[in-house]
Length: 241
Image (cartoon, rainbow, N blue to C red; front, side, top):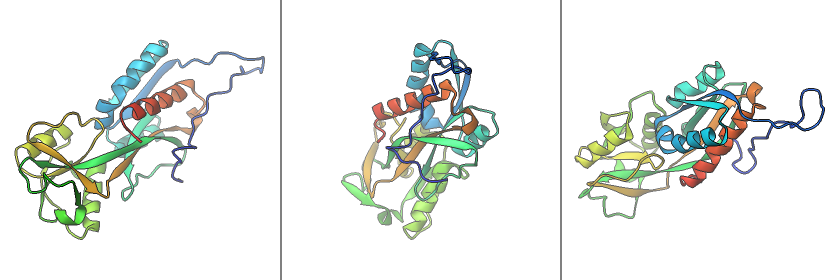
């Protein structure tokens, strides 16, 4: 599937005519909409989206399942959930099955997180090639972020020394604060850094693409249109580019 264009990948509103072509009718999002989202989007993006949809469309019953992108895309394809908020990286793209449509929500930047007092903590920026001797903290194998980290550091010429694996970003931050290693963590949903953790810019800055996916057969459903519009608006408000 071709890479969506951030400026031209639009979600079109449904046709405003009724099934008999008898003039304009008002299409309103109704029924149940199940959204699957990965952890940091579920924390940093979905609360505002769900609240807005519930406020603006009281006949719409929106429900959230937190699920990794490796699973959520397949769940949409199988019809288990209606909409997925997924992410991937330039060097670790996530395959999209046939029969799914998608729209970019935004780009999320990633920083290097190091313990206060670490030799790199005072640096303005760090290149990946300088991190060969670091001890790493990351998500478990099989997750998008683990795959991206290992591929990124291998392309820099070395195998990462991964000492600790934790699914939650806040757990990773606690391990960094304890001086047990360094981590690369995106900004969305990360929250305020705890005492003892310093963010250092990576050069070049890694970016992950956030996007919404739904079945093409459901593309005209007003609930999908409303949800994707809300995701994009709240993504921009959260600092996604």
